[in-house]
Length: 118
Length: 112
Image (cartoon, rainbow over all chains, first blue to last red; front, top):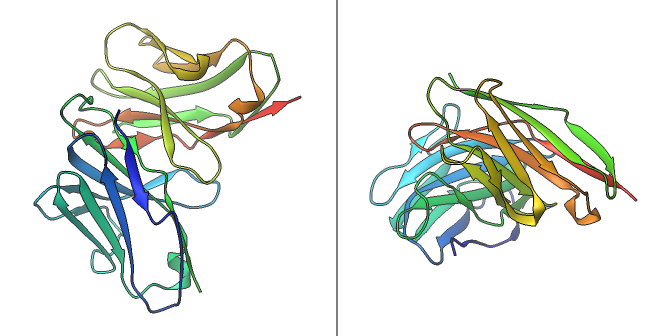
């Protein structure tokens, strides 16, 4: 139980284009989803927290107009990197916490999306 | 403010030897504590968690951790290392709003 998927797993795009990453909780309803960015050999950096049906809360220093987050349902959140540039290349990971049979305090992580902007 | 400190960015042990990964936290309230493992180019997998029940917590893959309030520690151990344990390990403490405060991570290297 408590499986989170991400799609795509890898994406390569040209500079200036937009990329959408999906995060789904497959077997539970996610009260909250989190989006992280991870740089090589570094810990996770929280980008934003999203709750279903409300606007995401962005961490300080994260551009909300560049990283658009939509949490349209209790099982789906999307991160859109708009007008991507090479410095946006990174490993993006989502996590979800929720109710049902899962523990409210536990975040369950997706497998991550590797973004490379050329 | 809550914080997590993982001692040692790299820990190297021989296959079959004891694994000990250290984690100390600071928290003004009884915490939820977690250990996650990350294999290369993958997301994070929950190893185990402490949620104010038993102080000795058993997790997956033979790992366990002991919550010691007096030492503000939550060290991760495994009696006998296996080559498949080579990965990055992260300790984290949960805030009231369930956001996680992360340690810097410890890379576990297993020598044959």
